[in-house]
Image (cartoon, rainbow, N blue to C red; front, side, top):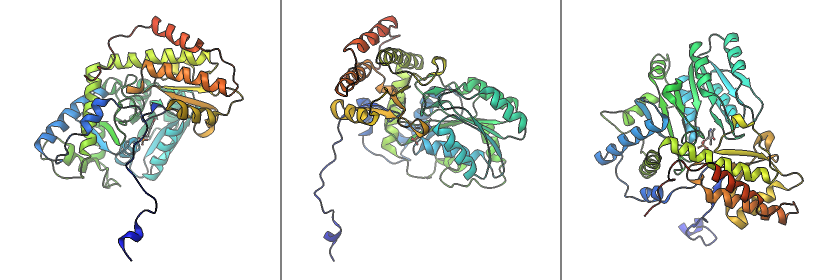
Length: 413
Ligand SMILES: *Cc1c(COP(=O)(O)O)cnc(C)c1O
């Protein structure tokens, strides 16, 4: 035997991914400033210079979440880890949790509750509709011993927004804590954690924050800290135990918990700094403006929105597939001919919808116009009748009717 026996049998060379236009459900495109931050020298996770950066990162996250919560930091791991971190700390065996399911991610929350030994009381709403406040109110009346209400603010699988502020009010009135999924909302539409009274919230780096995947910003208020303190048994996860993690992310006496993904954190610092420079209101307005233009164009192409206008997310546009067309082939051609990625439907919506993401740095005029032009040519090739230029004209007029608030994200020199 030799080490060569285990060597790959084919020739492997360096990996160079193509440059894509990312208009799917995440990851979104990444600004060159963020990539260059990521390429800076790796330093130790307890280096005083690194620790200073961590403090800035926490401040920038408090701005993004609109909160004063001391316990605000990025967890090492994708959004799913942020989700699990909330449940594993806040749900003890036997605890009742009302979980709202109106898409894929509410379903995952139910799984989390059950794996923590909790009892999930499920409030179901049709995919593409927001969480019904009345049903949640009724669920609390039927289950007054409920400890937590969990819901998804922006359901990426359908493109629907739910009324987070009212949901948090209902939970508080019934003495329960809230867990809110803000993975797709943060940076794209308002997420006002303190004003709305959200107790625990998590997000992810790769959606409207336009950072590389693999980090999950979270924020817990004092009520959550108190709840975790009175647990009679230890949190059932070593890695995600809030108290242990605070030994590293807390303000004083930092000690080793796990090796922080230093370079990924530089990237998040830069992407949050860019959000701070642009300003939240400007970022929200940019998402809305590009959404209105894309919508005008998609509707000209005969593609109808799944979600009623009042509940639509600007950053996630779910539209019905053009009738009689091979929807997979459309996506394949968009990728092949235009380097353009869009999302497919999930679950019951598989094959029925396309999802056009306009998240963070992907949310720009050139992507809107490119996707409309690309759809026109691909549709024409595939025998669907369209009039060239009509969709772009509709988008152009929508842009003209909604001037930009301010300059978009500053370009690199
Ligand atoms: C993407 C997404 C997640 C999961 O995030 P990952 O980073 O893929 O683990 C959770 N919730 C919502 C609403 C999402 O869109």
